Image (cartoon, rainbow, N blue to C red):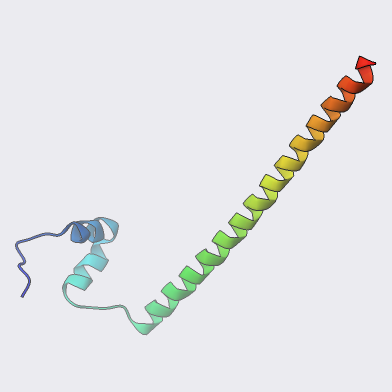
Length: 84
């Protein structure tokens, strides 16, 4: 039997995040199957979005590096052409 006089940090975090969720979980009410499926769909969507963002970030990093190399090569050519 848990001591209800003690408040755990996770309970405070749950209450701050969503008071209704904290209230229902304190009374032993769990999510319905529809809510579980919606949550799973939301998690899947966010994981796909994170993969897209990471892929775009990689493309942007590659483009930035290519542009930097092009600028360095152009500067080197310019110095070589005018140094003669």
